[in-house]
Image 1 (cartoon, helix red, strand yellow):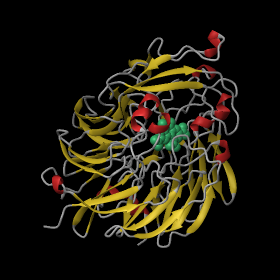
Image 2: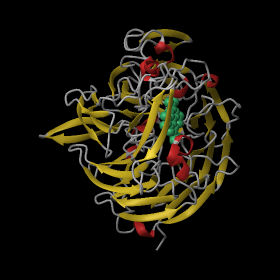
Image 3: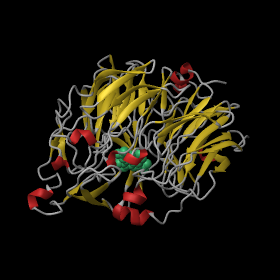
Image 4: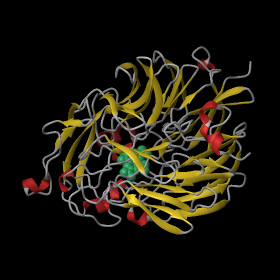
Length: 563
Ligand code: PQQ
């Protein structure tokens, strides 16, 4: 059956299918299912495993989707599979034909598809959108979103909101200009575009005509020096969520380009921010910048999850995000006002805290890597900064439980030595102007799965993992929290206490996002397995430790045995 707008908007309430990235457009990754719970999870068993095949065994970060007993899951190198969710048999496979010159910064990953009508739609590493027929896997339309030779790529899952397919782009390490765009999911026609760097014009397209819809930020160069806004980065590389109650798309934006912050004095809007965007025309309703004038590669892409809570008898329409910079933010999702913020990692060196009124960071003196031009050298004064640029949290989505009111945050404890270097923009070349090495903060663990209370800022429980955590998190009404580890395990924890209740080794690191659904009266769990992502490529000393982990490319599916 066709996937409708209503199916997508109700996804969080209909556990028989998964038709949105985030298991609901608000991105809570909370399932109402409780057949699996803390008293029976230890009996969970695999029912099938499916290999993505070929030698293309790199990071598998996909979140599977489920519709009418069929799983749609993506794999490294822009591949898509339709699998019979009962048997694990392949229905079809689509391999995007990628050119040699693709430039993904951080592994050849893909995080999932969007489903709409009779189509399966995903973004490719050469920055195209591809719509496939859900029954045959044959392309219905293919559309270029941006120029891969300039460094653009797509790794995020697109989302469908009010009949529009919404996508972001990657490329922040190459001086691209980030943007959010809406396409007609039936034809691939561009409907609107919204650049995420101040000074660039947004457009709405009608009857083949481009109509100006306002310059992002009002005009060019206000928070950027000279022409730097022209290659300002702020990639929307992690996609977004949608909140129906405020009718807002929430997209995060990545680092400003280049990393060397001395080349671009100012706040550098809208880098390292969260944007609330009108899904009808791409207008920016509000923004909240987590790291103004970022100098540490603290992308602000992390998912903004809508949730409500009660305070003094009032319902607060909030949204929360755990930033790469180490702070957890609770915002008013109607207007972007800062409600509160607190660290979710053990140590933050670059800021002393957040301004209690505005949430703006209070920079620590000497926390910013030095200006190379100040020492007439090729290398500025290095600093040791914590968290490392791979973040207190990276791409892997957290989850929010409506049962416990807690957020389950996959986080990492590491630091970096970072220094600046001179750099100038050249199309298709890295635009960093920085060097770095990451170091673990502790001998025995890097990853920490944390249960965080968004009202108090308290950590309620933690689970420490030897390797950095790099997989998404899901939670259920059965009071379970699921995530994966680079050591290969799918794990389940008690949502209230953090007690580890279950683990199963999938044979390769789990950096995918688990999902759960019900089929034929039974609750299923699925997760992609396959070690990779940014850590082995960029992780410095940590990369040396984890490079021994075996690669893979599978999707595993579990349920309780029939008694
Ligand atoms: N992707 C990963 C991953 O999948 O493991 C980790 C990162 C990315 C980062 O740490 C990044 O900074 C990053 N930045 C961009 C960008 O600025 O455009 C894109 C991506 C990506 O598309 O995966 C990552």
